[in-house]
Length: 454
Length: 99
Image 1 (cartoon, helix red, strand yellow):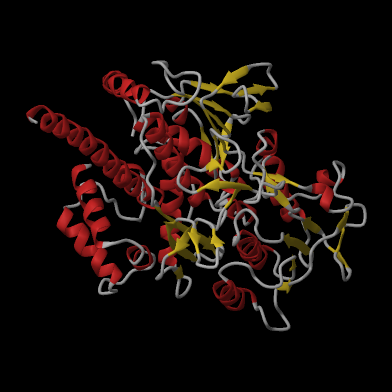
Image 2 (image 1 turned 90 degrees about the vertical axis):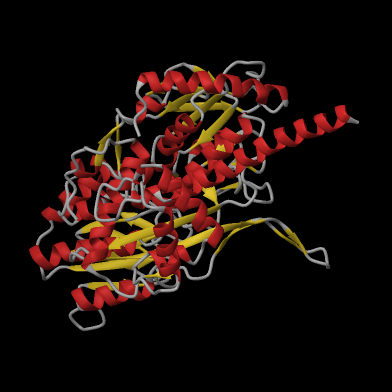
């Protein structure tokens, strides 16, 4: 929904009155209390940050929204496995920030280098300082290359993770797969859960296999999984691997190896080392272990429920505010939650956070029992897809008679689960999901010309 | 007496405003939750149906049919089972009034 200027002014004027009520109740937080506009600074414009900016401005135009994002445009991780398969190009899943920029009072192309949560300021590499009443950290993940021996800057030129989509990752890996001779071996890895996009690696095995089946049918895929078993949509992936790629037969294109965490890489020998053996590949794709984005550490919020250091950020589900640092909210993959780390969840919880911030700056309490959903599609690469869908409902902290405390959680409601089987219909839905979530995240207009192919 | 009654009414009125603002923002979020599949403001860009402008009674009936599996679905049965009848009503009213 695009605000035209006149509508915007009208709504702003209406809200100016409402703000004084917030100021009266003493709940307008921070240095701007006393009539000034509340300042929200959002770091990162992915599925979480961009969505949060849009909904904050839509629901409370009086908030002064600043977005700090280093990239010139948005590239989608969902659907990037179709780029590896040659179904889509990166340009089909890359989008302009021009529309969502209208939701920000200040859009800053820069990198955050420091956060002072006492002074409530954010510093950037470009030398600017931004004051905030509320800070929203939506930086996704930090990849821990040093946890894999030999995965240094030099090795990273040859070995790609492609777990943050873009030309240097997804684009290069696609070129490597194209250059690989028929009969070659593609070695890929699955990090230990929890990681960004639980079904993503198994979908990647599917889409790359679909490309090999068509273009280089003698080739093999070795999946080195750090987990003891397929971590997401197991039955559906196994069925797809069997149906399309001979899994379970002597002629399987996919060689799946659980409990095989990559411990080292050697780009000169094109080798991945696990606890058990060295695995040679013509193309190697290792996703290292990960944790919440570096900006979360800068703000001192990369802490678990107990307040000890990371990997993820414990939050209050009603507001996505850190459990440990006031006025700092964390979105998406950086958070410690029982949600899967999906684009859908980043998009939806960004709206939960925006809704809570709007209530709080107006001196009201956020929804005390929010309900939110996740729907996540995976493609087989063979024109079909399947999903997992869950409704989560807030349940507050519980104290048992013996004093044992069960922390607050979002409880998965009964009835959720996965598709019965893969289908072409679900691939059409997956494509529709992508167009709609991109529109919702980035404010793309109804007549936007998508080029993505489902 | 009269004065305190009037003051009481005023406070009740003010509380009413707060309560309804909260109810509205709760429904507003629940409706926004649907956007990632059904499109911003319930206006879909693809094969998934739009929700904007659906008649309220129709919306509520469909949610019940998804929940009871009398209308076959891929995803919607799972979502319908997670929401209450009162939430169907609130969402139905929301989408009926947002065309």
